[in-house]
Amino acid sequence: MTSQSLERGLRILTEFTENGPVLGIADLARAVGLNRSTTHRYVATLAGLGFLQQDPDTRKYSLGPRVVDLGFAAISSMEITGVAAAHLQTLSDETGCAASMAVLDGADIVYVERRRSRRPSGLAVDLNLHVGSRLPAYCTSMGKVLLAYRDPAALRPLLDRMDLARRGPRTITVREQLVSALSQVRQSGLAVNDEELAPGLRSLAAPIRDRSGQVVAAINVAVHLTTWGASLESIVDRLSAPLLRTAADISHQLGFRSNS
Image 1: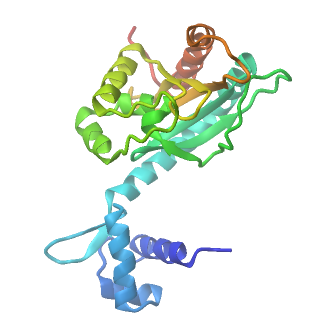
Image 2 (image 1 turned 60 degrees about the vertical axis):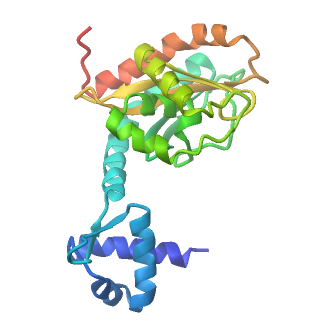
């Protein structure tokens, strides 16, 4: 079963790539076969979400920054996942943990690769996550990595949009504490999530850099207290080295060269 509303919204966005970068309500209504009132409702919704933007003088619309962000994320993730897949599988097999990669999309992370250990006694935990899954960035290890390396001017509006709701027993729900945690991630190059997303779930994440040095993705390994009840310190001691090594290998293959 398909969603008619979603289909219509996507048809409207597609018109900007096929019939010009700037279109008015009348243009869009004719192109998609809807009346002006219905078209305006869809366009207003898309504009409110950042997928379209309106010129205040002409009242016409063009594609908004959210579409550009998604386009760059898609292009980047296609290259990154092709490079990262084998590395993540090796990391998962070596550690026995689920290994994943995500990119930032607004205030959320989107999974672009996920590998499970082929070891019979693996420590992997399955939260029904898969490529395309979305989670709030503030309470995930990969999200904290991706937020930590955002430019401060770009980070502030993202934080403004976040509802720091409690998701697990240790969720950071105070903005100042989250900002402090992100600063620590930036200094150490490693993010630790200790039951912030869900009870019992722990994960470590590290940044992936492209040839310019920009952090374009994050990778993590995740375990659950029911499969590995060791202290957080011992988990970090065991998993941080292979995780950081894998992140460095992927970044190097993407063209990043560290000066250190």
